[in-house]
Image (cartoon, rainbow, N blue to C red; front, side):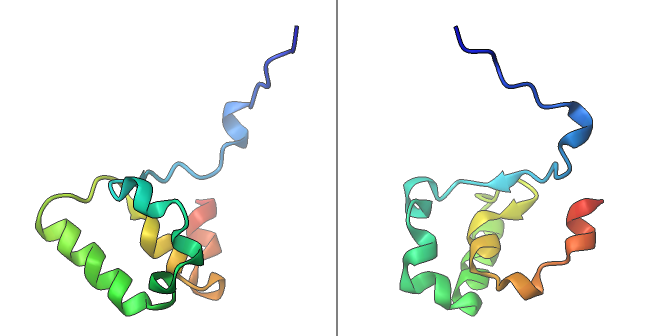
Length: 78
C-alpha cells in the first residue's frame, strides 16, 4: 500500500484562488496564440468581471499570459 503524501500546512505558501470559469478553454491556453496577446486577455478578464463570471482572486488566463518578469514574487510569497 502506498503511503499518502502529507504536505505540512506551513509549506503551502500561495493561497491564491485562481478563477477557472473558462474550464476546458484553459487546457492548452499557454500554447495558443491568444496567450500572446496580453491586452486581449486583460479585456476578456474585465468582461468576465462585468458579467459576474469571475470567481477567485486571480484570473488564470492573465496569470498564464503574463511574462514571468511581470509577476511580483514578493506578493506571491506573502
